Length: 322
Image 1 (cartoon, rainbow, N blue to C red):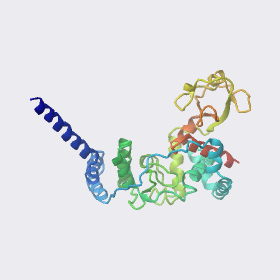
Image 2: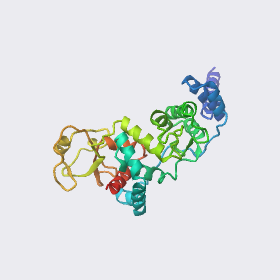
Image 3: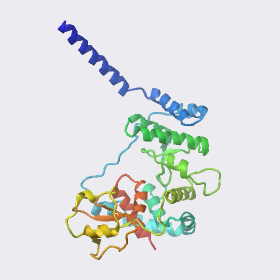
Image 4: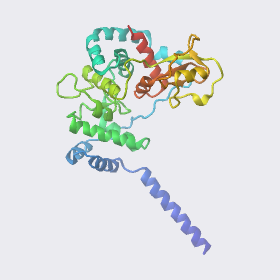
């Protein structure tokens, strides 16, 4: 009797493990059928869903995460990713396209230097706008399982870009992380904020600088960009600080940060105002640099993988400033 029980238990766990193994290694083609049904349920035309999902291939280079070298600090990271040649090129590009960028800046109330810095840092002035099949990348990212729900939504948004915005499948190219175009926006962002600025009938953020800049500026504006404000400032700490205060999640007024011992980088008092909630970040830990960052910084941060990358963008924006 005991042997039968042991055998039954063994068989149960053996077959259960087989089921789990089969589920964890489900075929990509089966997964695409699931995506197809989810897309149709989300409002994508069945014919559109079937047609484009049939062309999707597994993209093995799909990449969700960029790992920062732990040995790098802002002291050596920023000079490396924003060398002098990038600064001089950004200034030259700014002068070359000054009239059109300033017009977009005035239209959407987003300072032009930030748009130029995003363009420079995200795609090296539009040269790296994405070269892989966007649908294949997004489907593969969802299939990997990390942030699956997010990438299913982005995949569905990409299909809606084809159906609703008439963006061709060939044009819908992405990087290995699924971001698209000269400013590296996600499909859901393009679907919601994309602008056909050059009035040629298609939102082409890959080949049209006007469309790319206008779409980004429109998104930042609608998300609450503050035109009369900046991104933040480097500060110094004068007393021992509670580490729980660090991070974008903690928000206090300048007066409160003053009470916590935070001062301007030159040692002077912070602005005597109580109408802004700002955060204190220390990307390299408490032995490194400290910054008070504002709402505009949070919006820029959605374009990058790390705080280091966002601070590189803000650094370049300061270098571009007239």
